[in-house]
Image 1: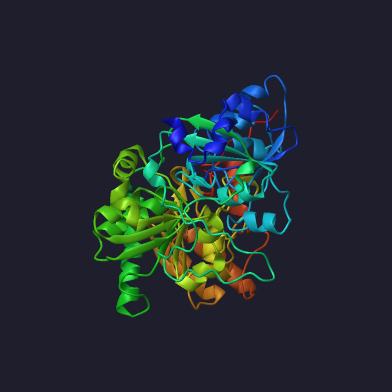
Image 2: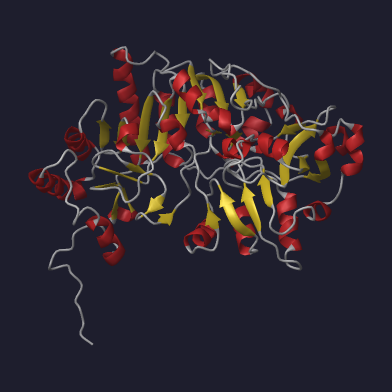
Length: 508
């Protein structure tokens, strides 16, 4: 039964336990592993490697598509295996190691990793470990629930280990569209002009002689951690839906809006869920991660097609989709992330990009990655790929965090991932600021009026007014620009502390 998933009989003798396969990974190697935002990651070999290093410690440079599921980033960090990690992660243990300087983290736009490998700006992987649903007669690899960077890792690596996950539905075969750009200077344009175009193959084309080990597994992906929309995220969704209605009424957008992209997480997923109760139909998606909202929209007859790089679902939605895959298969495609996030395709298709901000400032500069400008949260992911090139670049966030101790809208962003030139629309539960065609002073007025929480609005107006008195095209008070962040670091809150509320200083 298991060997039926390996249709190239010459590879049957490559089947081995994960413990044996993990021994192909040596100290100092660069390893490319499948996995994109908790989907389709190799599962058995990393765990076997963790056991291996208990006897023989090693360090590796690990690159993936995005974050890994099943706590693998946590376990690899705790085992001391990671010297370098790229290009994205979401694990709290790894995050702490990164911020402590114990793991060197390279935060990249997700479209760039493979391009840098192709042009030898990064070290090629010595070993690729790729989860698959099958190996074809030609010895090509059929991915599972993500493509990410898996195709190019397998093509570039000297050796390839394949994990065939028997838990995955074999009907996943045919869902993927593996297109690999040619090399410069003779690279041809990518012939993708519609969301549902298929321009590549259904499996990763490699020389089967590179496959040194095949491991059978039977473990599910991690379930998505998205929660149901709350009052604030529902408000953000309503603001956006109303904005879209006005854009359509003014003939600025087509009736079906055009292709949508949404980042991962509760807020972006809730925004997409907000479209369920709207009048929009025949929606399409050209994104990275297909979440619960994608399939709820398909089930409701609202969305006709979705293109992504991975599928990450809650426990509720997972069985519904993968036990009935034939119902969805003609409405889906999974691509390599350098194609799903390709800047030229994003510009060509006219995508509406909706991503989550950690904070943004009154002029529209967005921080997606660093708490108080220094501590890495997760990484920039694909938001920059889309924001710079989208028809509409939209960033969403709740106006406050930590029970109001933090304002997500600040005088000056403590770290800038997306500068004001790339940002069109900002939305919080308070309202929506349309920044298109506005000068910095005009942008600030819109942001303060529509996005700042009432608890912080007067302080922001005061800062802005005094900055304008000093002058400048983008007025600031440099000695106060980060005062909100400094208060947060020193007092635990960005709010100004009155004399009556100030803590008593005890003498020695």
